[in-house]
Image 1 (cartoon, one colour):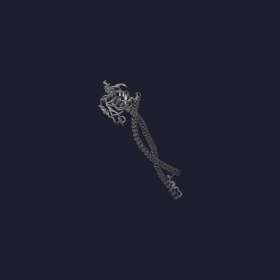
Image 2 (spheres, one colour):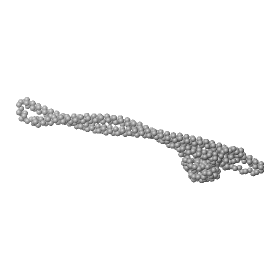
Image 3 (spheres, one colour):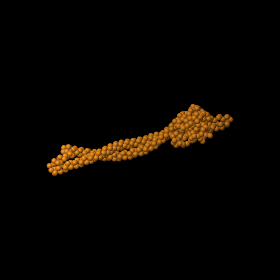
Image 4 (cartoon, one colour):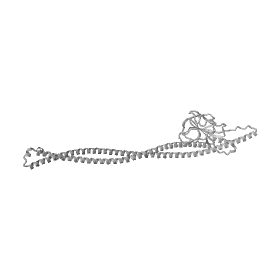
Length: 440
C-alpha cells in the first residue's frame, strides 16, 4: 500500500470556499494535513510489516530446509547408532570367545609345560640310572669279565651266577637306554607341544587385545552416533521454534498495521466522498451563479476546478513482466499478493508521470526500494494516486506540480527486485486497484 496525497486539502478547502449551501463545513486544512500524515505513516508501517513478514517467511523456509536436513541427519545418525550398537554386541561376543580361547590356550600351555617338566625329570632320572650303571661298569669290570674270573670260580654254580648277573645287568642297561631314547623323543614332542601352545596362547592374547580395541572403537562409534543424533534433534527443534516464533510475531505486527491502514483508508475514502460532495455543490453553485448572471445579462465566471481532463498514460514503454494479483514471489518463492504492474525496462530509463498532479512523497523502503507518489486529483471523474517503485533516482523534488508525460524519476532495481523494471501502482478513490484497465 502507499501514501495518500495532500490534494485533499485543496479539494476540501475549495469545497468550503464555494459551497454556500455547505457554509457549515468544519473540515480544516490542518485536519487534512493530519489525515494525510496518518495515511502516509500507516502505509509505510504496512510496507515495513509486510517486508518483515516476507523476510520471516523466507527465514521459515530456510528453517524448514534445515529441518529437512536435520531429519535426514537424524535418520543417518539413527542408522549409524544401530550399526554401532550391533557392532558393539558382535564385538562383545567375539571378545568373550577370544577370552575363552585365551583361557584354553593358557591351560594347554600349562599342561604342555607340566608334561615337558615331567619328561625332563624322567630323563634326568634315567640319566642318573645310566650313570650309576656306568660307575658299576667301572667298578666291577662287567663288560670285561676275564676268562680268569670265569676259570677261577669256585664252582659251576658260582660261574653260572656270574654269567646270569652279567646278562641281567646288560639287559637292564639296554632297557634303560631304550627308555632314555623314548623319554628323549617324548621330551622333544612335549617341548614342541609346549612351544605350539605358547604360540597359540600368544596369538590368542593378541586376538583378545585386538578385540578389546575393536570393542572400544565400536563403543566410541556408538557414542558418537548418539551425540550426532541428539545434535540433529536439537537443531531441528531450535530451527522450528525460532522460525515459528518469528513468523508469528511478524504476522501479528502485520495484522496490527493493516488494521491501522484500513482505518486511515476509511478516513481517506470519507474525505474523498466529502470532496465529491463538495465538487457537486460547487458545480451546482456555479450553475446557479451562471443562471443568475445570465438573468442579469452578466458573463459567467470561469469555473475553478482541479479535475484533470485527460486519462492515464503508460509511464514507460516495455513488456509486462508480472501482473497485478497473487503470484509466486520471485525472491521469497511463496504465494504472495502482487499489488502493482511490473514493466520490464532498462535501468536509467526516464519514468513519465501517468497524469498531471503533485509529487507528494519520495522515500526509500526495504521492499519497494526508492518510491515516488503523485496525487492526480480527479482523473476522468475518479480520484487517483499513482506510485512508481524500485527507482534508481528522482528527477523532481517533493511538492513539484508535474504535467502528464513529464519525467519524474528513473528506472532502477532497488529494494526487493530481481532486475531493472517499473513497479507501477494505482489507487482509485482511496483503494488500491489493478492499473491495467485504466491504461490505454
